[in-house]
Amino acid sequence: MAMLLEDIVQSVEMWLKLIKKPQPYVDPNLDPVLLVPGIAGSILNAVDDQNGKEERVWVRILGADYKFRTKLWSRFDPSTGKTESLDPNTTIRVPEERYGLGAIDVLDPDMIVGRDCVCYFHDMIVEMLKWGFQEGKTLFGFGYDFRQSNRLQETMDRLAAKLESVYEASGGKKINVISHSMGGLLVKCFMGLHSDVFQKYVKNWIAIAAPFRGAPGYIASTFLNGMSFVDGWEQNFFISKWSMHQLLIECPSIYELMACPHFHWQHIPLLEIWREKEGCDGYPRTILESYCPGNCIDIFEEALSGNMVDYNGEMIPLPFNLEILKWVKETQKVLSHAKVPSGVKFYNIYGINLETPHSVCYGSEEAPVTNIQDLQFFQPKYICVDGDGTVPAESAKADGLHAEARVAVPGEHRGILCEPHVFRILKHWLRAGEPDPFYNPINDYVILPTAFEMESHHEKGLQVTSLKEEWEIVTKDQDDLDDTVSSRKPLVSSISVSQGGSNKHSLRSEAHATVIVHPQNEGKQHVELNAISVSVDA
Image (cartoon, rainbow, N blue to C red):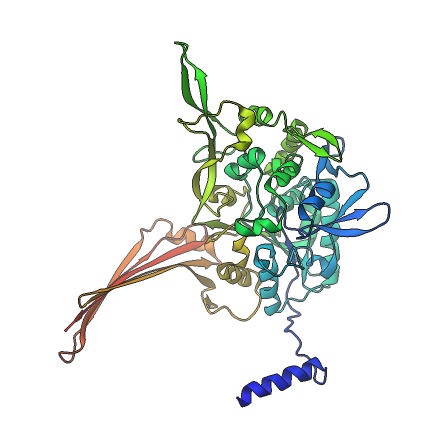
């Protein structure tokens, strides 16, 4: 009770400013970090060009769908490569509060119920402040208009200015860029177009869950059905799936996330449609048509040929945009030719262990599609592969760059930004915070737990417990170790222990464990422990 009273008194004193509020820990030796979000990961404000009034249009609760349609619905201008709002008096601005962090932290600061669904970099920012980073000195954010192309010159100019300002604010220290999702494509475009600037200001680039070769199933269904920013009941707080659909049809960034047609996929992502057609005998037959990434454009064109929106009483056609497709081909060239400049280190973290859309199928043998324009009313069925639920692991790890390390982390596409596993990796690569308890400074490696499963069953005097645990060892000198262990086979070791009861009322138990140490691969060494114990009543 005395301790509780003391806490209360201390809190009141701090509130009355009678004592100085404790200052957060700051490490002045840290190199600066710039956080770059993915699609829909930046707050966007609409500025009225006539009166200068500014309001948040992404994300908000009250009037969300109406504001979204009136302020963010857009048309692509092929002469500039920019998507412009349908409202000619509106300019979209990304707020710069908190050195750019305010726009990518919590996307709706006013939200209370369901707040987690609008948190973006929030958990990572909180964690990094604990490690000693300081907003405006060593921690910064770069929000951007995610409707635009990842190589839009206006965005490239803003990023160049941001890198320069971060470099100067930190006292001339080179920058660690951490990107998430589509932010990885934006950074790669910048690196390809402005390699000299990137080399001058950047020390390390860490890409997290980047769709380097696209997000095939997710984007194919987005063109035909739209997408929701969040799942479940929280959708009620945001704009409708249909409103989002009409926006994304005119967004070059979405087209730049389509499956790369020139990538050698392990399994080619397909768009499949069950269709009813007349056979040679004149009778209708149901067949399954399959379209690879390079051949599905005709389907998108036909499906969206009649798509229109009512904007202030004017019917505006929004078909699949072939002008954007031309623009995207140039973006793909930039991405394919980009290289990591000398002196810069690149790291890749990608998500695994979740069913991730790869191919998408519409209709069924019993209920085929009779009109392609009706695809928007069909529920897509996915053929999934391993990934983070949005980006296939195969796409995310195929960065096409020289990487210091590629690490797979079990996690969901946006949720991976909150994973303790990811935080431990970042602390190691950034050399930040208190020493990691899993870090061995002698051998310079980090042991990262990747799986833990434990089950116990008790019946009729018999108790059986099974344990499965896995780790990854990420080493610094991976190239040297690769040469020494690449030809080895997995090392297997077994351990058995038993314990007999000292009297008739105690238990007799035995335990057996197997440890498997796999050879190093791409800078990682995988370790598995499988154990089982059996206890029998005396």
